[in-house]
Amino acid sequence: DWTMAAYKDQAIAAIRQQVGDGKVICGLSGGVDSSVAALLIHEAIGDQLTCILVDHGLMRLNEAAQVVAMFREHYNIPLVHVDASDTFLDALEGENDPETKRKTIGRLFIDVFEAEANKLGGADFLAQGTLYPDVIESVSFTGGPSVTIKSHHNVGGLPERMNMKLVEPLRELFKDEVRALGRELGLPEQFIGRHPFPGPGLALRCPGGVTRDKLDILRQADAIYLDEIRKAGLYDAIWQAFAVLLPVQTVGVMGDGRTYEFVCALRAVTSVDGMTADFYHFDMAFLGQAATRIINEVRGINRVVYDVTSKPPGTIEWE
Ligand code: XMP
Image 1 (cartoon, rainbow, N blue to C red):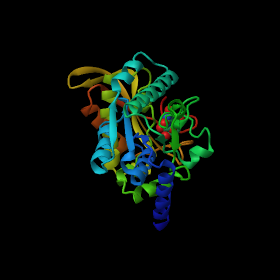
Image 2: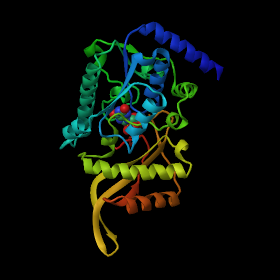
Image 3: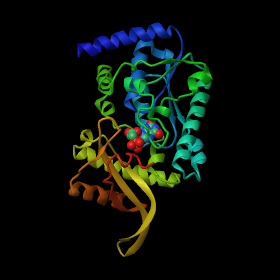
Image 4: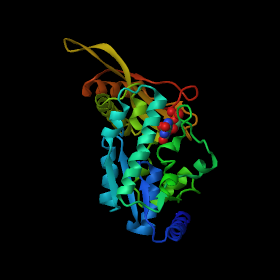
């Protein structure tokens, strides 16, 4: 696609001109937007860019490791991987309210990010993967009440606090164009086609209190569900799919014993932009297979249900 190749060269020239010999930091989430922004900026200014991945302990199974491997090993981009899971999970202890959970995560994210940036000696610029729709709609995707989709990933509040200027090389692009640019930059297809993942991560998929044990159970169930979706060739037909661990235990039987374990809800939706969504119509055989595997392979879950709520009136996430 020569148009995108030309766009890439132009964007690189613009980044060089804006940044000069300044230092840039970029928060990586593992999502396609921040990844493409980072690759583009790296191509423009090399090691003047450092990426920071704040692992809040609320990522999916192996997600942080995959992002680190790709950026450090495959692209050789300087990347600080901060394991801040204790900070986040300790702070979340005993918090059951969805909005409080979101606010706690958002506040800590800024604190941790700022501390890491300071350790690097600060920077002149903060890079963000802001897209055109984020620019034109001040309140693009509202999450739960009063939360903007980008409020977490895009570390709002930091540039002013740290006196940094913004570099937003994707500001003119729509999502499909970002994907095309990602391909142009050699980003592996498996990253380009990734489902969106919310900044507050698995906290939204663990309704009520979040604990390390619950997160471990949820991660395993989620990984099995996604594995089944990929094996069935359905990943690309779905906008988002994930497991939710309900704060409810029910009775079951296993062998000659009675079990009393958690309920796992499976969610899958189709959507164009996340504003509205339809639940995905799986075959019952697919759901039965996913449920059987989850119950057999994950200790702590003995019942699986499928969420058939569309948006509206439901939201995609459970919190
Ligand atoms: P809902 O659940 O509101 O989600 O239907 C719509 C889209 O937004 C994502 N989402 C969030 N993303 N921070 C984010 O970065 C958030 O607080 C947040 N809440 C929801 C959700 O995954 C879906 O893609």
